[in-house]
Image 1 (cartoon, rainbow over the protein chains, first blue to last red):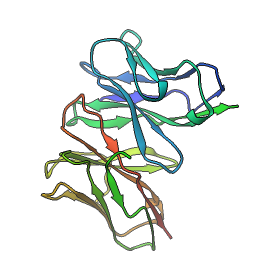
Image 2 (cartoon, chains in turn cyan, purple; image 1 turned 90 degrees about the vertical axis):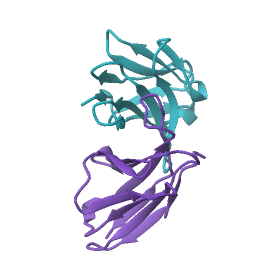
Image 3 (cartoon, each protein chain N blue to C red; image 1 turned 120 degrees about the vertical axis):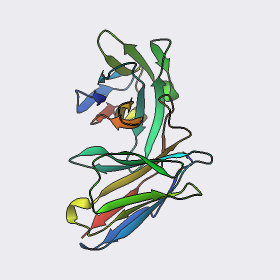
Image 4 (cartoon, rainbow over the protein chains, first blue to last red; image 1 turned 135 degrees about the vertical axis):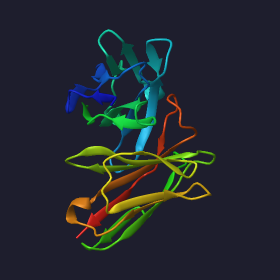
Length: 114
Length: 114
């Protein structure tokens, strides 16, 4: 089965500093990777996806993600974090071995302090 | 607003009871997914439908069942409820079944079993 892992349960940064949320993947074949964000008491919102092409993918709310095939990583980044970026972030992969179901990592809680 | 509608938003019921959660996908989306989110188990994939047919199954209990109707809305039925079934249940939809299509999530149904 294809899977993703988020090695950090929590990330804490100061407002204005760069934010990185880590994700590594394990797939056979080409990876199809996604990032979602969940604000308190809300559903998941799609941020961005990597399918093919440029290794740097730009998404919503100023977020971007860097795909690194040699390190099997797909880290989410934001150059300057805002307090409003505090939320739960999920990395996900399309599992081509199980009819393309979307499998999620455990999630990383991001706290941005003022 | 993702365009995916879930009802009800909150549900409180007693152990042993049966409930039905409803999901209306985004207009035109053929694929529907159900997920369970609990504090200790994260976001767990339950089941996936595409144009009325079951396509992928995750860790769905035998007490749980789902279906997708001809108008593409879906229902998740939970029976013989236990305290441990208390969780947030999300529905998501995507246009196709393909690897490069993102899924859009509803706001979720918070189920509390007492």
